[in-house]
Amino acid sequence: MTAPVSGSNGVATNTATTTVDRPDQMDKDTFLKLLVAQMKYQDPLQPTDSAQMMSQLAQFSSVEGLNNLNRQITALGLSQDFSSAVSMIGKTVSYKDSAGDTHTGVVSGVQPDAKGALLVIGEAKVYTGQVTEVR
Image 1 (spheres, rainbow, N blue to C red):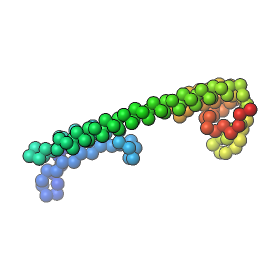
Image 2: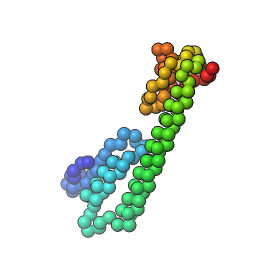
Image 3: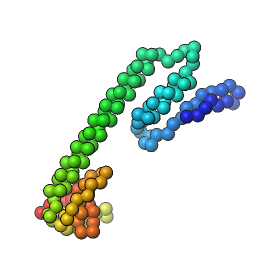
Image 4: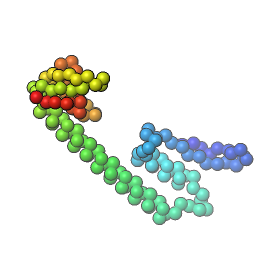
């Protein structure tokens, strides 16, 4: 956030800025910073409409609920991915590497990763999504 700044005409103007990690998505911290800035810099003679503020808080609550649901669905997907990866231990799989070349090897283990399960195939670590065949 920034403090009031004098404009070119000498009149103080209020500016509030914040950074967002992803420009296409606001998180709850960003929303709260904007809400506080809005309340801090509002005109005391024309305060923010309470109905509008309640609407914004309801929207925030809905977005927070959707974010929680998204986290739960992501965790479920990662759990299923890990379970299917564990079932491949001891099996021969074919996979494509980042260059598009096909390799074959026996899965000797599985390691968790933030993006999904990593199959350990010899010295390689391969995401389950790269597997093209299981034998």
